[in-house]
Every structure is written in structure tokens, then in C-alpha cells.
Length: 148
Image (tube, rainbow, N blue to C red; front, side):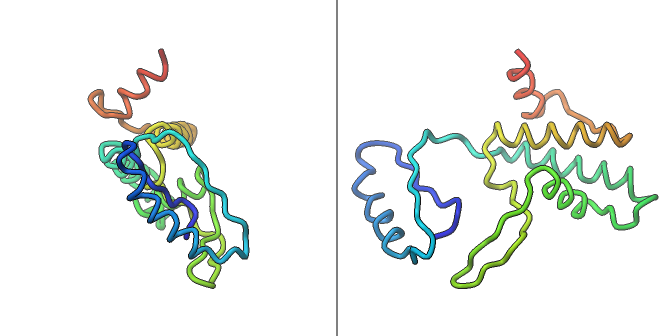
């Protein structure tokens, strides 16, 4: 079992089916570290629209910084932003521990993704790079709701 596993249960009718899966996962835990099971409300994961805008921003930052920093490719800008604002984690694969891996943005929900993007937007502006925010983007819409 890896950190971040979850089981979504939509109704009472799903419980028996999901419990079989949960039981199997718990029984497969090696217990070298304790296991915690948390119940919480489901939140929508980040949207494809948010992810697409993040990639646009990485290209814009790359275009801005590439003349001074030859390694400021879009992929490296994304990696740097994730490292700076999401941090790193240790990942266990079987018995092997891979330390200091940059956290993935794919596990963020919409609100967490807005926060991550806010940090990027501010950092870029502080460094002279002004990122575009299309008015019809989900980021702009969520920011508007958040600012009310």
C-alpha cells in the first residue's frame, strides 16, 4: 500500500464491495510502520483545465528565463515549482525506499491546485515573469469564488 491510496464509496450499496478491497489492502500491509485509515469527505481532484494552464505557465516561465538559464525548460520549470511549493516525499516500492522524490501535483484536489498555482503565479511575478490567466479558465473562476 502506498501513501495516498483511497477508496471512494458513493453509497451504502458500495460498502460490501469496497470493504473486500480494503480488507485485502490492509492484510497486505507489512506493518513495519503503523497503518492509519482516515475517513473524510471526497473532494474533486484537480481538473484537466487547471493542469493545462499549469503547463502553459511552465512554457511561459521557460520562455522568460531560458535566455539567462539554459536549463529552464518547461519540464524543469514544472519540476522546480513542484519542488519549491509541494516539496518532496519518500516513496516505498516493495522493500525499497526511494528518498526525496518531488511530490506529484496529480494527487491535488481543485482547492489545493489553486493554492499551488497561486504560489507559482506570485513567484513568477516576483521574478519579473507575468503569467497569463484566461478569463474563462477554471483557475480564474475558482479564484473569483475564493476572493468573494
